[in-house]
Length: 627
Ligand SMILES: Nc1ncnc2c1ncn2[C@@H]1O[C@H](COP(=O)(O)OP(=O)(O)OP(=O)(O)O)[C@@H](O)[C@H]1O
Ligand SMILES: [Mg+2]
Image (cartoon, rainbow, N blue to C red; front, side, top):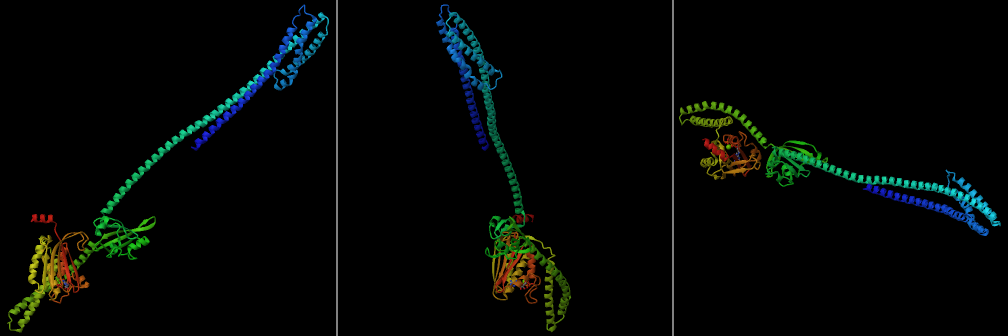
């Protein structure tokens, strides 16, 4: 736009200059035309006057009338010559300097000729004056007529000179006229040229402005098209990038959703920024959404209230948040939302934003199964080793006992009852019998791990009810038995007599714990649907039969609890307990895919719980069909 304004200004200036120059040139032309007119008036006016006088003179000095008197002739001459004599000197003398000034260059030699004619006219005027005076003084008519004829001759010469003068004037006039015309033409040509030039300049300027305007619009359009094109390309690129990002994000989301390991991102304050479904599940939530924004510390460090479990300064999370280091923890305990412990291995990574640590990512793996399997393995190995050892000993021991028992029994027959030896032999046989029983139990235990017990579906409610029937007759009468059995608890795949022996063992332990005092034994059986991780013993979740044996006996301290499932661990006096009851129960329940737990406090009684997985109804049906 600025360019356009400059162009328009230049165009305006050009027009003004053209107008001013043409006005000035016109003024010059007009001035020249005026002087031309003045000159022609001046020159020709004078000559015209002289010629007029001369023609009057010629008329007056025309042929003489015979009857004309001398006096009349003299008057005629005087009347005719006096204007001539008046005008003639002025024709030359007065105009001489003007002619000189006007004719600066004299290519035709007009000036000289003009001077010559001037001189001749002057001489004629003198002669004529003398002749007119001579005639005036003449008295003789014939003499006067002679002088009159001389005057006529002179006038003819003056007439010739005037004709030439006239011719000269014409020449000067045409010379001047052509020069003035040339000047005028030159001026007009200059004006035309200047006008044309300015018109060209103006045209160029206007054309340039139009071109510029059109070009500018074209550039504008091209620029707009380019902008549009660039915007389109940018939009395409953004779209492409967005699609790429969406695909990548989708892929990432799929990976995060489908990996079995927990990923949890927290900010510096420990608030959950991101969590994958596996982590949410492990922490006891149904969906990741429920975890977002929560304080993650109680999950990582325990504590009963949110905010309780602040990270210890040397914890992996604190170190990562402080130093940005990546820390690996081989084994630790996390806590579910219902405060149940989960064994995990985890690693912490820093989350950086613009170079600063803005939070941390925890990647954790559930070790519960592994820890459990590990402890089961240890237990199994322990039991295997002890079983093998005890089995070997029990076998030899049994073999050794056989002759002792057989020979003692034989000897007994040959010894009369009155003999003291009879009583002694009886005691030997009793002791050997007990030793044989013990050896057999040890053998049973040692064979158990190798024994392939057949597993069949059985109704757990029925089996427990049967066992309770048996128990009632064997338990001491001082004990009160509370039984609560869900009538249709479900079907367990396993060995019913093994489960029965587990229940018998638990109940006989409970009875022992009463130590002869009146106590209450509670047996309950109920179904239980557990979500994964909500209950420690069964991480997989599902339906279980929960069999509880609760007594209000002497209870156990923590150290005892740790040992009770070990084979041969007993607190009972020698000969009363083998310490195999609970270790066998543990083995049996785990073989059934279940679990056994204990809660006890000294003086407060004990609660043993057995969890046995229940078969799904469809599987029970198909198993029955097979039968
Ligand atoms: N209900 C209970 N109350 C208190 N202590 C118990 C109870 N059940 C078991 N115990 C403790 O656990 C130990 C181990 O029990 P376990 O059944 O394995 O062996 P035992 O009962 O001593 O011997 P066995 O069962 O071979 O006769 C017991 O000696 C006892 O100290
Ligand atoms: Mg026992």
